[in-house]
Amino acid sequence: MEEKEGEIIQAKLDSHQSESQISHLALDIGGSLIKLVYFSKNNTSLGDDDDNNKHLVLQGRLHFTKFETSKINDCIEFIRSKKLHLCGVRLLDAPASDKIILKATGGGAYKFADLFKEKLGIIVEKEDEMDCLVAGANFLLKAVHQEAFTYMDGQKEFVHIDQNDLYPYLLVNIGSGVSMIKVDGDGKFERISGTSVGGGTFWGLGRLLTKCKSFDELLELSHQGNNRVIDMLVGDIYGGADYSKIGLLSTSIASSFGKAISDNKELEDYKPEDVARSLLRLISNNIGQVLLQKKKCCYLFLPRFRKYNFI
Image (cartoon, rainbow, N blue to C red; front, side):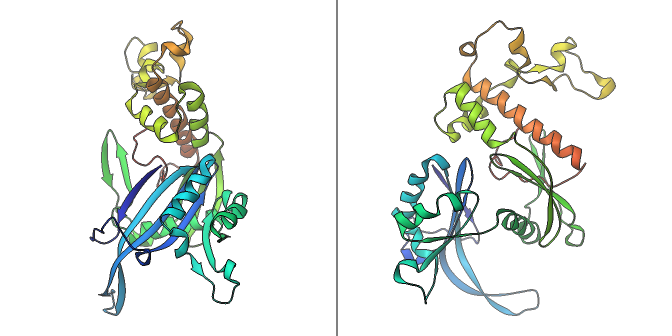
């Protein structure tokens, strides 16, 4: 489990926050990972909108935490230890045992609803995953400066978003599997493609091939590896040269895990970090290929793998 924070307004909070400072807990319980977010407030102030109307501005931080779904009890204990379940939506006219509602998305919101009721005494209210995903993406693109960017050759370049020309765009949601959603406006979207080769594939195969004990361990391992030890590159086939006629560089991957055919080695002869890196490239390149078949230019959201450069 790893907890991270995202600053909303420049205000750093003391690490020992009281229960009254924490609010707005929400969960996404997927097939592989549980993503948890909560807001800790600092104070409120008055601000002006574009029309110079006064409104309250809530200051504080968003906290992001994740757990493997198989460790659902660890997640519940984390919520209990920080008393996060006490900041759910309270119903005034409900029985005493049914007064707190927790908003959640994902299949686990259905699968583990009874467990949350038993362990924490709260009701899980299921929200549609894709509705929330699209609403959140639209909000980020409209309201958060420098939310969209390209990442090429190790360089991040921010993209200016024209609010009058935002739609349509392609939203790629990488979870255990992958869904590609064409967004045409607020609440207007359709799933147009996807693939079963996603984060669950990376974690499942990675666990078998490297013996990693956690998803985070596998991710960090892949960050340290060199896929060229295992992947067959264009240069390996053409004597170190590019295949310029069709626009392939010598460093392009011609065949994922292709060198394992001729190396005459067993799995234990390869470094786990190189195996993890090759596996990560295989899966992310496959997702990119499916994506490019649907649209030449899109905004790509990788919420789970965002800090890593894969392709």
